[in-house]
Structures are given as C-alpha cells and as structure tokens.
Length: 299
Image 1 (spheres, one colour):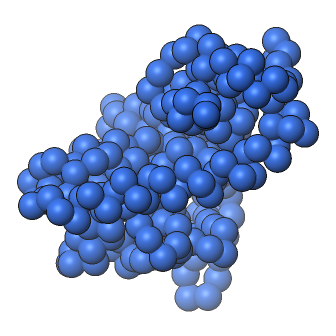
Image 2: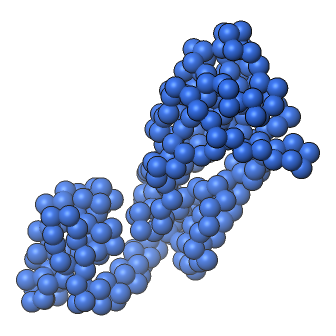
Image 3: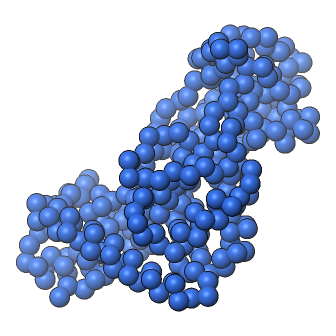
C-alpha cells in the first residue's frame, strides 16, 4: 500500500498546480514533494504528473486518482479530528485567507480573544487581496467583501455590517492646493492611488442622495493595496496628496488632526465582510469553534 505521506504530497501538488505552490501550503520543500511523487509513481508503475520547466499538470491517470483520493483524504482528516471531541479544549491548525483590510480592521478585534480562549489552536492568517478559491489555496475559511463564492460555501457576517470609504488630505496639502468641493474637482488634485495584486486599479466611487460619481484619478504615487497601503497613508499625512481608503483606517489620523476629511456627504457605504467556509456537514474542530466564536462577537 502506498505511503499516505506520498499520497498527500501528490494531492497537494496536483491541487495547487505545482511543487512550489504545494510546498508553500504544506510547509515542506518542493524537493521533498517531488521525491514523494516519484516514489508514488514508481510504486504504481504509472506517471501521475507531466512536468515541464514552467508547469506541472496531472496526467489522465493522475486526474482519475485525484478524483478518488480527495474525498478519501477528507474522510481520513475528519476521522482523525473526531479525537478533538475527547480533549478538554480543541486543538489543531486553522488557516484563514483574508484581504488586507480585514486583517487590519476586523481580525484585531477577534484574534487576541480567540487565541486566549483556545490556546491549543494555531491560527495561520494568509493576507491576500486577489480572489482565490479558498480550498484550493489550502485554507479552511476566508473573509471576503461581497465577492461571488461557490454555492456550497456558507457565509456569516463578521465585523461591522456597514462600512464607508473615506477621502482625506493633510492640512499642509489643503493649504497649498485647496479643498475639493465636488468629486469632479479631484481630477485636478494629486491623488494617492492603489493597485490590487491582480493589476486592477480601482476607480474612486462617490454617492449622495441617489447620485453616484466615479472618478479616474491621477497622482504621484501608486501602491500595492495588498502590502503597501500604509505607505499611502503616511504619504498623505506628509502632504503628498489626497487619499481614499476605508473610514476606519483613516479615522485615527483624522482624530489626531493629521488628516482632514473631505467631501464627507459623498462617502459611499457598503456591506461589511463575511466569513466564508465550506458548507459540509462535518467541520474540523478549530474551524467549528472559530465559527461559533465569531457569531458571539458584537460590533
């Protein structure tokens, strides 16, 4: 019978489309995964993966094997997790995939209390702004803002139910460039913009009394919203331009007088984030207690 570790290595590589991606998810090296797959192929006497310098793809035999192994390994994982029911406190690892905004504005209210309540659970948070399939990313659950998810996913509210995008600039910038009186005025201002890791640069959207305005902005700085949003905030405080970001993100700077709010009556609101997780009957203990914990939070 093939070693379960070799089987798990093949499933990880085939699911994540390569040895590097699988290594990042499993916490092992690409060379170890490659050797495990070779052992499995030698034992079965058939090639499971086609390898090139640029990609790894399952062969017909590999795809058929993957279809049968995935539910079987899931059943094994669920069976092992049953042991958690005999512990005083649940243990194990919980992996969450979240956007940067959630890691900064939502999780700080949840994580310290959750870790204190369940010290034997290791919580791993992957911050990623591009849209990914949660299970294919190797995560147990994720937080998203109104993105379309698979139909078999369950969504529960997490964090504030309504949020707003805010517009602000420093007093020094406004003294030099003046205050915009309408969103259209922003076309003449220095705007500090952001780009998602997917390459998309979101437009600035405003609404008031049923009217909406979308602005194509320009300016001296573009930052990666998944990694360098705080750089844009620091630049705004230093007087480099106008910034458009989550209200909660900018509020501390506004409270300290480092930034001044602009066009407040035009700030658009939107539905707050949700926690998404697979809608299967059995959930691993770490995910199950996290879902229960989130539902007790008040915002």
